[in-house]
Length: 165
Figure (cartoon, helix red, strand yellow):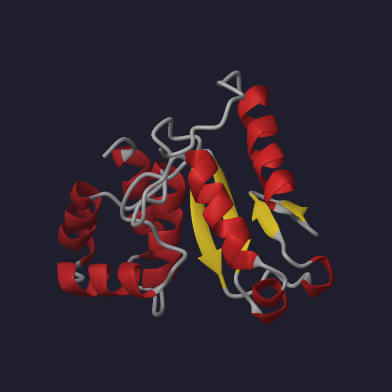
């Protein structure tokens, strides 16, 4: 737990307020980047919420993370328009480019986390991804690879793909 003082301030802001659990978890996650085990235990002790309740909420809502995520979140739209336009191919291309095996979602360099989403709201750009707040649409496998490589290059990383062999 990196930010105990800030977490205490956050707890005090929400303690005793009805419907405070989700906003509390959101603010704590913003502070730490994810909801780590020690932090969840601490929240349970300080708020009186059972640990099972905290984990239940944190695992039900996809906005919460229980493990670290990358600096860049790559949201791959899997909605109908994107699906029909090849979203699965784009998703697999990005997994390959990031060197991720099935079940992994964050690159080894902690630069990228990939997430499937139901809809980005930009069906006219299908297939589309959103990296943090930037939308990239009308993607091909090559364009998707290039977007990832450009970010890596900007971050000073190796611009070559980290494909699985």
